[in-house]
Amino acid sequence: MQKAIQYLNDNNKRFLEELFSLLRIKSVSTDDQYKSEVIKAAEEVKNRLEEAGAENCEGIPTAGHPVVYADKIIDENLPTVVVYGHYDVQPADPLELWDTDPFDPQVRTTEIHPEGAIFARGSADDKGQMFMHVKAFEALVKTDSLTCNVKFMIEGEEEIGSPSLPDFLTKYKEKLAGDVILISDTGLLSLEQPSITTGLRGMSYVEVTVTGPNRDLHSGLYGGSVANPCNILAQLIADLHDDDNRITVPGFYDDVEQVSQEERDLMAKAPFDEEKYKKELGINAVWGEKGYSTLERSSIRPTLDCNGIWGGYTQPGAKTIIPSKAHAKISMRLVPGQDPETITKLIGEHLRNVAPDYVKVDVNYLHGGIPYVCPVNTPEYQAAANAMEESFNKTPIPLRSGGSIPIVALFEQTLEMKSVLMGFGLNSDAIHSPNEHYGLKNFKIGQETICRFYEQYARLKK
Ligand code: BES
Ligand code: MN
Ligand code: MN
Image 1 (cartoon, rainbow, N blue to C red):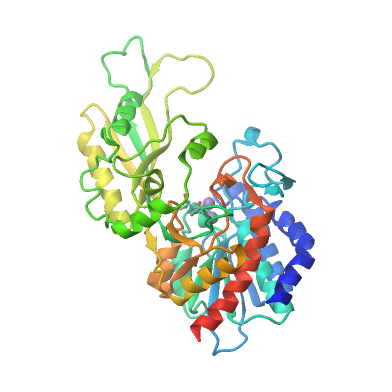
Image 2: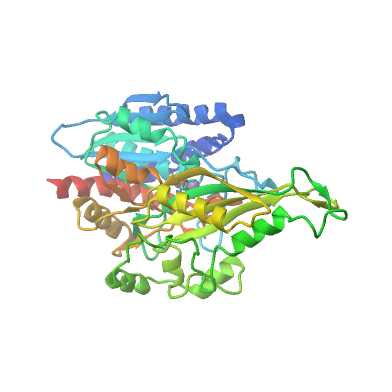
């Protein structure tokens, strides 16, 4: 192991240059305009895997963006680790809020990262984290220290809900067969207190359209006598939470599995500084469901949020109209027990039921995903915990995350493999936001911990 760690140290500068090159590629999966860049990123990941010593490296076409596959089977009798990650990124806009070009990576220091952080779209989510796996693998191969078989499955559609991956998993089930899926696409509580993600929330994402009159109307001639779809939509959305900030959609909580008091007690012990949290976000007070802490609200409880709302006149200056239509995008984060299809049906029925006669409401499903919980009494969890303990000199705590990686539940259903979510990002990394960054220290310690994971896993799986 010492040889592999030394290799990581000796080659750190080159690794950063290679990562920067990957970060320069605008692989925004949601926008067709960037299709060639997405392909370019897939090519580059494939080439890096080849150089690292992987075999059978290929970009496998799908109905959407390609999945990069590579493997190294050293001994059929050893356990096989399947590494999952994504090379696609979120759009970088609003560009004017970035201090430097999102696709021209720069290292700058911050309060949390005195040793420096890489500022670029995708630096933390997920190119930087996925690349740690390529480099950890390279270090193990080049120093003859690999103790497991490894398969890579790096996709290009995670940020749009992995639409092509379910079919891909079915089609390549044999090829992808292994013992565990290892993913670094989540975060740590902090560099001082490491944690392992033991749950992901699911999702139901819908677009709501409220239609009133058949065209925009003069608000002087019709204002007061014809319902305004923008007003109605705002009211509908406001009414989706009650005074305790619980979601009012009938049946919404019916299938929610209660988290044990034991797990809640453990969460309550996790170091979390609410004052710092508020300060970092520039808010005066926290908000959320009555009876739950901030950490609980953002991980073990389901949510409903309007992500965007528009309609009528939004250009400069004033235009006096009653708009014909108003729209909103609404996402619901789901917790174990809740089924995205059922929830999507419930919100659709509810909005149509409560909508007044003078408008029409349409609810369109955009995408969704099933929630996931990882068991902690398994060799793979223990391997991750041991690896982290070695790297951080501190036992990691298991914590559920509020984020979603919808495909993880399908890894279990289709591939029949559990996933280990050993991520190294921080909440302050600003993923999906302007000035996304990833700590140099996180990048380094992540690679070391991944190397140690293979060693631990091979030992514990024996
Ligand atoms: N890597 C994130 C998910 C994440 C981040 C989980 C931090 C836990 C901690 C992933 O790329 C992501 O952004 N997922 C989307 C879902 C998707 C369907 C767009 C999300 O959570 O919004
Ligand atoms: Mn991600
Ligand atoms: Mn993301």
